[in-house]
Length: 94
Image (cartoon, rainbow, N blue to C red; front, side):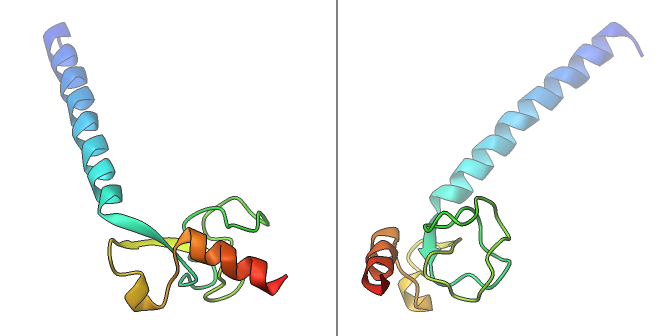
């Protein structure tokens, strides 16, 4: 391989990463965090109670402190809650 082919390949790879990054950002913009709908082991990240900090670590179905990304506007229809609503429910249980 000559130098110009290597440079062209590196440039193409760098440019494609920018496109992938934009697609991921747009995908997240079309989603919202929905609390209380994640099945055990299917949460998307840390929970509100702070008992874990990673995806896939929820222990119970539909725990109010666990969340997952859903299509924007669909959370309420699934019986889910916003972060503020989930926090209030957690306070009420104490």
